[in-house]
Amino acid sequence: MNLSVPLNEKHIVLHSCCAPCSAAVITRLLEEKIKPTVIFYNPNIHPKDEYERRKAEQIRFAQKKGVRFVDCDYDTQYWFEETKGLEHERERGKRCFACFLIRLKYCARFTSQHGFKVFTSTFGLSRWKDLEQVNEAGRLAAQQFPDTVYWGHNWRKEGGSEQMYLISKAEEFYQQEYCGCIYSLRDAESRRAAHGKPSIKSEGPKHYSQ
Ligand code: SF4
Image (cartoon, rainbow, N blue to C red; front, side, top):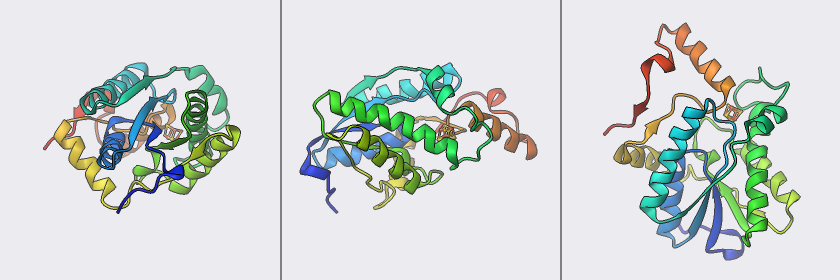
């Protein structure tokens, strides 16, 4: 089925959380001759070497596909300030909503300031994310920049999740073991410890394999 982009735009802004999710979305957009400008604004990712690893994978795929990549601030101080008091929220809770909003507001501002009209994000592709929560954050971000429109497309539909795994394996992307922030790392390590698994750090970086 054809994608239905708001305002029938052919150039849009795409917020990317990581290469695996964005690769499926970028591929789908390009199939329909829609050109994304990829924004990598993810000050939630901790620690810095994890951030650099995820960003490098995103740059590699963007270059391969010939799409514009925008390297944004890593202003972790702002992220920690905005999520203060939410350290013990569960995943999909209030901290995640704040985290989506921080990143989508940045994306909406970029959209407004650089002559675009429509923005979307890769957040909803992961089955670990609450799509309605993501879309609510997107709509709120767009309200703050009224010349922008948030496109809340469900990228999981029409085989989007399967595409994510297929492309990730083909590209041998770095495989993330936790969502991104220091708290999701803490919780992932606790779950591992409870199941007698080695820590993420001790295992070292893994990649999707065929
Ligand atoms: S778990 Fe993921 S979405 Fe939620 S606050 Fe942490 S990095 Fe953001």
